[in-house]
Every structure is written in structure tokens, then in C-alpha cells.
Length: 93
Image: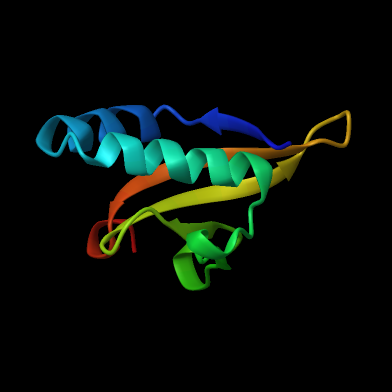
């Protein structure tokens, strides 16, 4: 099981998106549960990013929305997923 950490930028972006579209809440929750159990779950389409986001990863929430995250190892050699950004494809890239 992976640990999930939310960055300060991630939280308000998600809250704003859910306020606009309440259906996103369940999709985001399902995506985070999949990230906790398997970063490379087939439904996430997780992939490493290049360019200015080099070192980060992206996964799919739904057709248009993505989560940008980092994969880090803790002192206990556990995997921590730091959620950095949420938004539409065009907004996060």
C-alpha cells in the first residue's frame, strides 16, 4: 500500500473542481484508491513526464482530467505519492 500526500497547491484545485462538478468527487476518490494500491493500475494510464515536468508522473481521472504526482521513497523505504496538481489536460501540461 502506497502513502498519499497532498501538496498545498493540490487541495484547493481539487475542491474548486468538485464544487464546479460534484461528479468528479467519486472519480477522484477511485483514482486515489487505485494509486494507493497500484501506481500502474491499467485504468490510471500512469506515465512519466518529460520537459518542464521531468521527474513527475501523470495519471488519468477521466477523459479530460489528470493528476500530476511525484513518487518518493520515505526513510522506511515505503513509497510516497505526492499529489502536485489536478486539472484538465491543457491546464496541467
